[in-house]
Length: 131
Image 1 (cartoon, rainbow, N blue to C red):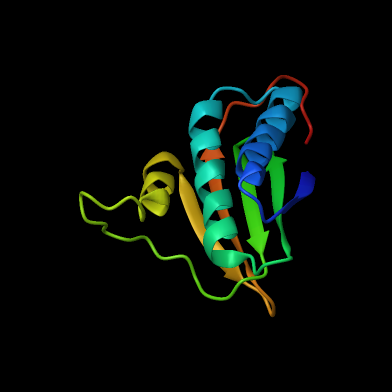
Image 2 (image 1 turned 135 degrees about the vertical axis):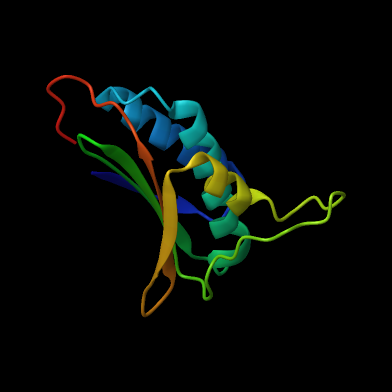
């Protein structure tokens, strides 16, 4: 498992996606990287916009085993993520819809302070891998 903290700034969305991509590529998990990158971007965006109070950071954690890749985004904000049904002309509200469509599973874990939003994707592990 690898994890990294990111500041509450727009460049952190790209940086978190790059962190996950680099980690999974080093481990040899590359079969679903495009889908994983989209989901990471959406969860990092949600953490930035809705979950992380000003001055705080959010954490991205990457884990993998023989069956799946698991990505977690933890922030210190309140509330639970809710998938929306946005209007066709709305610029917001589609992130969790994308995660629902692309990931094999997703959910959230409430903490005393904040929450973790996670998703998993079945993936083919490289030969001899242990993450």
